[in-house]
Length: 328
Image (cartoon, rainbow, N blue to C red; front, side, top):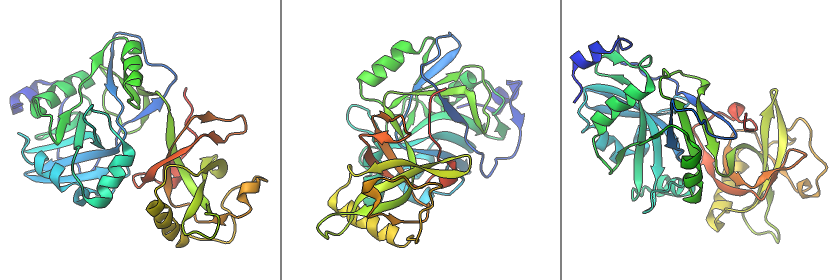
């Protein structure tokens, strides 16, 4: 267990009160991982980003936009109470992992809906605050050393996110071969910054991102449920069309989504420009308030997505944050 003396000996650690919440650091999407030696490479998890606040035995979880999600993960909260800390702020991702260690957002969505806990885990990759000290200015590599000391070798509901140092090419290749979503690379000496930076970068094996749901088309033959979701992203403050997704749904989910979207119906489209696409003639337009996670093959030249597959609804972002994600 880390002592107060050890924290005081860290020149960049500052004595401070435990914050209620801190905005998480975000990674910039890039085409390839860094090759320099001063980088740490971690697996990219396909789940919900969560900050865990621990204060004298009371554990609370917050999504990236500051909403409290404690009630959704009681078993993980109970496990976090057992960590050898008085107060702490942890950064990680709630996931459902299979026997091979791969995470799935679809499986996580189903688990949250049913209350199932099999495979549930909190993958912890950063330590922002510990026992009276703000660690945001402490270099990442040292923060992870402290974090590993707290988590130990646990591989149950709480898991320390291991990393590889140096050239990330081979790590990225193996992650993709293994069916992982991608990797996140971080400068070993970087501080923790509550914004999107180039000190943290992400590389994806496939294409997957969030889209704003701006409408739906019904199933044919008067069957209940949605046939496809109409999607868009924000560009310069305006919603632009990016295509439709009609796969990845169960029969029940099609019906449930129609009920949810039925409460948001509007007479006209929220798009800045409605394309002349035959598939949109039967469109039911809705207020742009729900977000869909969608996997797809590629972007077309006219800005739409090819071969999309619905992964689930996201509740941890604001629709205004949803933009076209292109590597830099």
